[in-house]
Length: 573
Image (cartoon, rainbow, N blue to C red):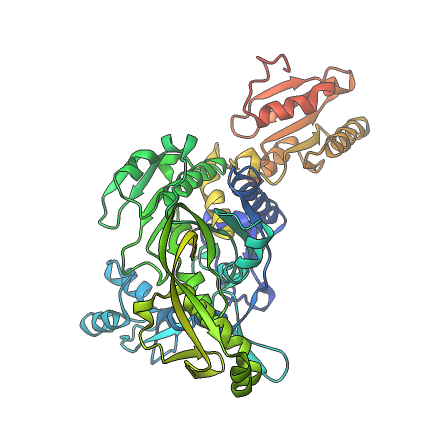
């Protein structure tokens, strides 16, 4: 059965080449979408604008890397995904239709279910009548379903792995390499744009809920004792809704001063995110930072804000999230891998403290554990960095839980000794703030936000920075001299660096309507006066205002329009 396109945006998206269900000729597969030729242009411009905003133009040191989609199981065990990356599932016992249990209950009972435990959902289903939408059978049997896509690395199922559910773990495992490449300085942001996969139970919300999609995110590593200079962002007015449902709309400096954020770096990136959202068309009043409650947020997070915008069909939609992940990830990966992911930071004032040192009887350790000796020494070093003398407890033996099993290390083989020293630096696990954006959700949100009707015409009022084309060029009619002149202008603008669409088919009114629907901001029309040397007309997509502009100053006029300048006041029209 083909998937339905039953709202205005999705009808336009399919017809005008923005997006459509994948594998349509075989009936489509829920949660998988193709991004069409116009959609890919808008999506790539959103990605490039994100890169420019958070990386290229940032005053902070934020770099970009690329890591694989295929992730070894051990990595996602360390991150907690194998255990915790789950959603509640319910299957109709009669027609076998599958639902996400919390969302179905929310839709039928008109209550909020986010953050409910599996036990609480089971109790809810036992007390309330929640029925299958297809056949009306009452549903009861709730189970936990892991959203990871399993795969195998190498032939004959040699090693278990998964398609990554986020790009973050590739960043965390590569942190030490990136840190060394960037001269071992904090703060450091490490960004990644890439595809991820989540085996959603019942994705039914277009690009909002997909099984494969693009994430744009970065992990910002910092010393938790250092706070950012908010600079120009301190006066940015941001609208936040706290987990207790209190709505606050204040300057970021005032929000931070009230202690509403777990760390000031959260405020920095929330304000910067509000700036970015304005660049793709959303005013500060249209963006809400919704704080997740303790029950709702992920296992790694000390505080999370969802970035919400309103859509016509799906209501408020999360297009990004900003999470304070503390040192959870680096600490866990250090413990699981046996590799030291801590870093040295300079102390403002030297202090006297007990410092851990690892003593190893290399000959005896090598004789007993052979090739595993290196892993044991790495694990002991990591343990020494992350513990103190009181926490270590029994010094006669240490139990290590390593990838090849648990091992007991007696004090004659190796031990951790503490000596009092004056130190100028200390080892820490950097803390992390993670701004994470869904590129496909942003694509949907900006299309939804931009679509409007004017005199029975649909207009996609996209910001010019993310429109699929900068400008369109038309001959007024399909007459040879007009066509030749229009094509010459088209080629000139292309060589100048503009993205240009050329169209000579149909009436001029139909051509205007076509480019209005795909969001082209301006259209140039070549007419008889153009042949006589009296310039061309430029038509504005939203106001339908037209200006006559000299052919020699066309590029200048387009650049002025992109900057929001008035052509008449500049003497260009």
